Structures are given as C-alpha cells and as structure tokens.
Amino acid sequence: MLVTGIQYPVSSISLMSTPSVIIKNLSKSYGKVEAISDISLTVDKGEIFGCIGPDGAGKTTLFRILVTLLVPDNGSASVEGYDVVSDFKKIRKIVGYMPGRFSLYQDLSVEENLKFFASSFKTTIEENYYLIEDIYKQIEPFKKRLAGKLSGGMKQKLALSCALIHKPEILFLDEPTTGVDAVSRKEFWDMLKRLKEWGITIMVSTPYMDEAALCDRVALMQDGEIMSINTPAGIINAHKKPLASVRTNNMFKLVEDLLSMNDCHSAYRFGASVHFTPKSDQLKTEVLLQNLRKLGHNDIEVAPISPEIEDCFMELMTIA
Amino acid sequence: MEDYIIRVENLTKKFGSFTANDNLSFFVRKGEVFGFLGANGAGKTTAIRILCGLLKPTSGNIEVAGYDVSRQSNKVKKNIGYMSQKFSLYEDMTIKENFRFYGGIYGMSGKAIREKTEHYLHKLGLEKEKNTVISSLPLGWKQKLAFSVAIMHDPRIIFLDEPTGGVDPITRRQFWEMIYEAAASGITVFVTTHYMDEAEYCQRVSIMVDGRIEALNTPEKLKEQFRVDSMEDVFIKLARGQQ
Image 1 (cartoon, rainbow over the protein chains, first blue to last red):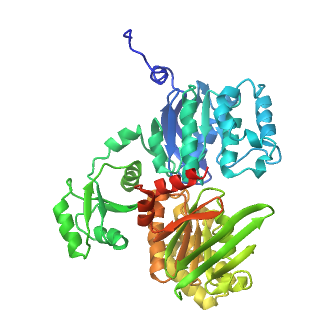
Image 2: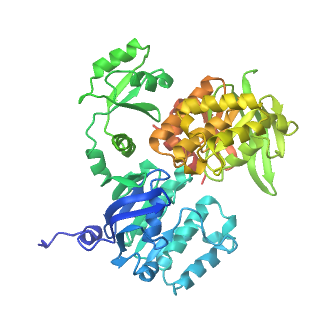
C-alpha cells in the first residue's frame, strides 16, 4: 500500500517493476573451456550492476550473450523482456554496448563516428544531445580529429557517447576502466552516476575491486562462476571473520612472519599495511603483538578494521 | 654515486612539435623497487622505451646498467629484461619452448637454458605442465611465467609495464612476492601500475604529469608532502592539479 506524503525516489519505485535483465542457469563453453557456468542473476531497472572479477572470470562472455553477439549453450537470458536468442533484433535496438576493446572507426573523425551511430539507429545527434552533452562536450573541441588519434581517456568518452546516442534503455559497459589511470577512472564513474539519473540501467564489468563500492549491486565472479551477489554493504556484512590492519618497521618481512604463526588464517599486503585474519573467532591483539616482537618487529600497530570488497573477494576465492 | 644503475639527466623526447618527455632527471639505485607512475598519456611508455634502448632521446644523458642508451643500445638490451601485460609469452608455444626461445634470444647456452627452465618450473610448481601450450593456461600462471622468462638471463634491471593488469587479487600479491625476491637477489625493478595500492609496495615512486616528473620520493614522504593518507590521493592531487 502506498502511503501518501512519502516521496519515492525514481530508483526505488522502479525496483518494484520487472527486472531489466533476467538470467537463468546460463552456460557457455569454448571447446573444453567453460567460460561461464550455470550463472543466474537479475538486474533491476535503473540500477548500476557491477560484474567484478579478474580476466577469465567470464565477464565478456556474459556481456556478449546479453547483447546478442553470442548464443548460450544452456540456460536462458532476457533483456527488457526480450529473449536473447529469439528476440535478438529487438534487443539490438534498445541496448547500448561498449566493448572492452576500442571498436569505433579509427579513420573516421569524432563527429563522423557519432553521426554514423546516430544514423544507424535512425536518430540524430541533436535529438538525444541532452543525454551525451556532459560527456561529449569534453571532446567536442576535437570533433574533427580522427578517432584513432585520440588519447585513451578521450576514446573512452567517444565510445560512451556512441553507445548512448540512440537513447538505450540499458547500457552494457565491458571493462570501461581497464588500463585507465586513477583520475580518469574516477571521472568515468562520475559520468555513470549522472547517467543513472536519466533512468538508464547500467551493467558494467571491472577487474578493479574498489569500483564495486560505486555500484548498487555487484556479482563477484571468478572462473566462470558467481561467488556472491549482493549490495557492496551486503557483501561486507556477510564477511564474518575478524580482520586487522597491521604495520611494523619491517613491512617486507611482515607477511611471511604473520603466515608462520599458528593462529593465522590469511595475511595479505594492502597498500601500506597488511590485512591479517586469525584462525580463531577473535583477534587476540596482545598475543599478536608479543609474537611480532619476538620475531624482531618494532613500531607495531594493530587495528581492527572492517573489510573492503577485495578482502571479501579473496576470502571467497579461498573457500571456493 | 657508483650504486646508481639508471642515471637519467635532462632527458627530452620530442615527436614533431609535441614534447613527450620534458627534461626528466632521476636516478634509480641498484636493487631498488622503483615505481614509475603517471596518468595515461603522461609520457611513461616513451621514457621506458628510451631506457630500454628502443627509442633514441632527442637530448639528454641516459645511462642504463652502465651503458649509454643512445650509443650502446645493444649492450643495454643484453642487460635488461622486459615484461608487460600486453607483450609476454608466445601463446601457441609450450612453456618449455618459450623458455628455449627467449633463452636463445638472450644468447644463453643450451645447458644454461635447461637449468633455468628447470629452476623456474620447479619454483612455480609447474614441472608437469612444461609441454602445455601457453594459451591454455590461466592468466595468473602466464604472468608468473612471463616474469620468470624475463629474468632467466639474470638481467641487472627488469622493466615491468603494468604486469598485474586484470590479474586476480591473490595472484597479484603473489606476483609482488616474486618482485621482492628478484629485488633481494640484486635485480633492480622498474615498474608501472594503475593499482595505487601497488605504489605503496615500491621503495620510491615517481609521478609523471604531462611529460614531466612532478614528484619523486618514498610513498611515506609523498603522503606527508601532499598531506594525504594514500598514494591514490597523492596521484589524484597531482594529476588533477595540472588540468
């Protein structure tokens, strides 16, 4: 029952409608190699859904099936209610797709590429300019330049503009930030957040674990399987093991020394510190300090912390 | 002064009217793990190609492993190793064939190649896979093998250009253990990465912006200097500040 007087944000209303993507028991093999294996998930309308995992996790195969460039071996998938096999022509009209490898016409100019994509979908740049304005105006000063002569960041902006120019209902972005520097990655995610406000559903893949936090929900993928699907906060809450950040005067020896202890489940470098998980259910800080001192460490800092997505990912990899 | 293995003084490289490297000067110590960071298009790849003797600088004095990169580029190439995410092993050859091929290129004897192949296969626990074709291996194994092949001729310096791109988080950390091991054995490591947590694993880090080195220090000192908590923030402050 709707209570009057409560303002529902656009995104929470749309959560109640039919999902944009429904995937059931999807599998695809290339010869003996099983690229994705029995994958099921749904993507709600208007959400940013992230597929997070390293190379070989099956992200690209999954995206190619959803944009109807590949036919699955088993299972079913639909996009905006259309089946990826029987209704592929309808899907192609309503999706925007940015493949992992830059695939625009290198010998056409920036403007020509955009015009080409617009005319392929029987629209014009002017008609949907409001959607790409934010992104395109950053490369518009170079609109006469050949796409092949653009820098990495500008190519990425052009590719996104071309994927958007026909006003798709859903965007598939396959590793848009791979090999991109930290600053450009941040800018790219800012652009996605603004696109979400137009109500476009976004499915995006990335090998960078820290980008998971920027999605509404994520699937953590490894070797063709989904290890977990949840909100970023949900994934972190599901991680029940205690975790501590440890620093000493000898960081180079620290991982090895922690791993040598009886009460060690895992020890991984995380930037300037090491994330340590004990085997026991509780972190015994005093014992840990003593053991580290015995092994010759000084200036020891041990602080209990809550995990990052990367901690959770590695833990899930270990149990798998 | 003797313990510097890379000496770069006033390196400038121009392509037509475009200056890719603008008067770079820096020194890398023997056995150091040196992080070479920068935004896309800042000029890192150009600088690395010059240091490897693959591209001539427009001007400057550059010595790598004691040799002048302009005049003695063949000697430079013999004393370095190189690996990147994009260029590593031949996919349609087996593990053993890759070792033999690269060993041959480095001018190693058949005996030395056999010994090194065995040594690294044993270390990686891949003895049984020696006749496996590279294309059928998981990415993590490929990267560890590519690193082993790149140091099989005992180079004095190894250049690693985004070696861990797309690799899973556990393998990424195992890869860094291999980097430390190589450094401990005296090999100097010159590495680029887009993972800012990996910048913390380097002993010193330089950050390039628009063709110039804008900062060079230990991660600790850089964070102090820019009054931030992480290398990611140092990077963002520097790269954004220039726009």
